[in-house]
Length: 239
Image 1 (cartoon, rainbow, N blue to C red):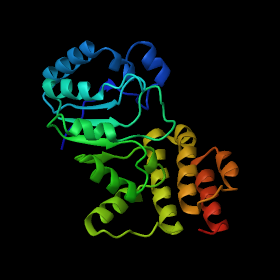
Image 2 (image 1 turned 180 degrees about the vertical axis):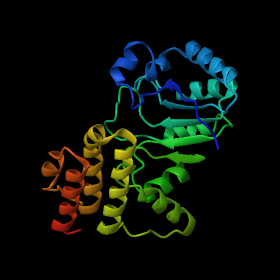
Image 3 (image 1 turned 120 degrees about the horizontal axis):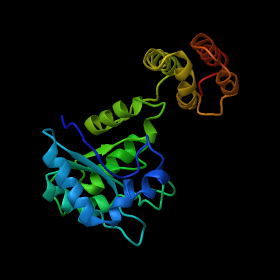
Image 4 (image 1 turned 90 degrees about the vertical axis):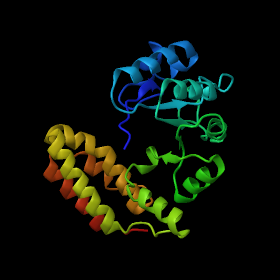
């Protein structure tokens, strides 16, 4: 399994995008191809593990240079490349395009992974077929929906679709997730972090705005939070 040491050539979740780009890091690096080359060479030569890379298609729609960056990555010894189908200027707006992945696959021989707006098994299959990508990467679509990976694998293997999870399954996984959050972060921090995850799971379970969410977000302890989550599942019908 590749142990990715991701050079910062794309926006990352743990650092605010504006702060990263303001110091010419993150996706801003795409504007300086020579610097990209030096960084890739340095990282690959500095570590004993395979190095993977994730990029966007370019700085903006007028400056899409992902194919060139992919070539530099292959020359530097990058083991695999993930491409998010938006430019830096696109942020997460509009729709991701995967035509750039197709061009990159025609240019380099390293594994190429498609990323961006892959939100269903059907889209996953279509992207793989259209681009020839070696794999796909799932991001925001998996929030509150870890079943998505199984659904995609099942469709690719059998050509048939799995039904969505029942509310009882969503509740069980959510409760397990909460317990792990409490254990890892401690009660105070975890209760706050858990709020967004609860909202995502409830959206998955009920497919509609959940009237219990405001009450859940007022919980200050794990016991209160879990109690209110259970109340939400007991009170609402899975549509």
